[in-house]
Length: 342
Image (cartoon, rainbow, N blue to C red; front, side, top):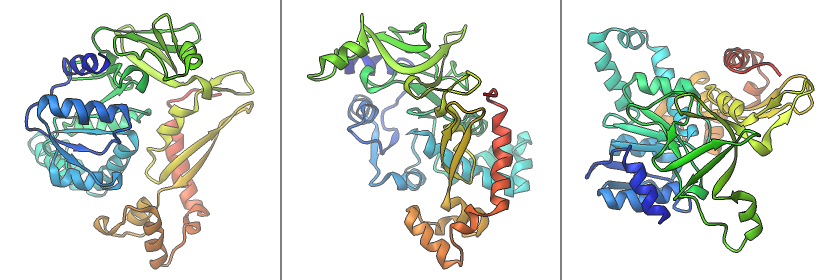
């Protein structure tokens, strides 16, 4: 019943057409992977192309040219970084995108470069995504819709879609789904797709599903138009020395959109301000600092480090660099404008 409800409700707002290409890479142990690969694929007769490694998903997209694409923010961050690198380094493209008669040509070239020349829409979820990524995709006529849900409600609870897309939110509730915010800010979900409970774990079930309402553990808010925004995880929120509640997840995911940054970890409990620990993206270092051709940069991080060594560099040359620090600091200061002070 959960699956039939979820499939029918999601297909009321997301259009899938027989024969369209779709790149499959989500693990089938993942509820969203099951929704698309096991149910939508069969119901709508999509042409499923299975990726042998998530590291190769963009290469598969270039070959398959999917009509539909599902990813997580980290994948789109990589694509965004590559697109921005091309646009910012080529004045003719940057200018051409602003000229109506030329923009469609340059959009087509950029879309083809990442395998999205046929893509009608793409979807993202599982973690917050930088709105700038959504804006860039939309500017290239690739609608990238952000949605929200979890295993306990059989994948989708809310989503943006054609005609109802508000960047910075995870969309509106799908039909026959109720969303409300508890007094402590927690997001609650009720609908036929909500689970009955955890297998042989009544204690966890009683803590999570109360009077048919699924307690998600996520903190959020609903605006006047019914769009839901996620602000963090309830259990991850900490309090600054000034008494302000801080949700690190959204900040961390936003900072990861900085081209040179691979991962971000935020510290700030009982402190006057937040401090971030960054790891660097070796692939971007090879591309932008060592000037290795894109098609010669391996996807495996260990292989990337080997190439860096072959070129006469070590990772420490960049982690200890004042220039690297200043470059990242400049991007951090720009992104900080989206967040209030602790």
